[in-house]
Image (tube, rainbow, N blue to C red; front, side):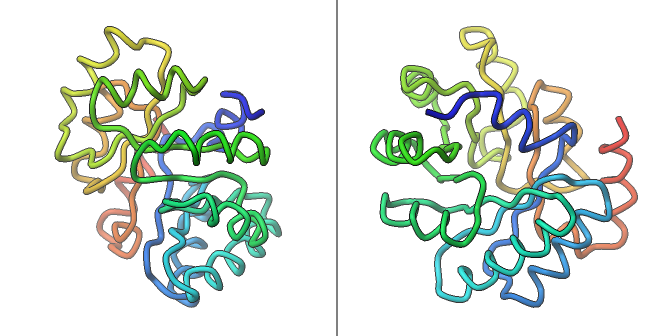
Length: 201
């Protein structure tokens, strides 16, 4: 069974991760390289199409050359777990909390990061033995959500995803979020310097 220590190691010391959704192989490779060069340790490639699977395999291959981990996102069925593992993914991210997927991932020895948006979701995740959870959609929840949720669940570490970039990531980190996820911001040269500053905090 996977443990919380897996994500401590997988995310490293960086408070930012990259999500490369539907970007194709070439663009995914380019942005993953940008992320790694910037100092981001972890990259997620959502797995929704055959091309996504190709992109995941290639990003995994390049990541292994640099000692970086790559995860598979948008895991919404148990069947995707084997596909993600075969492609080399080191962790799984889901938009919501499905106990069946969480248990299957744990049994397969790959850490699951399910999405939550309510206290009930968080409590169910904790009951499944998880203390790392993805909060989605983060900008809809707002930074204050994390300040409130830390009261009853101080042990939970959150990865905030959805609508985040250099303009708002800091307020979520200041609210206690462990990791914020960015995507297209990595293509915006004007944001890279600000993201680098966040990584250096």
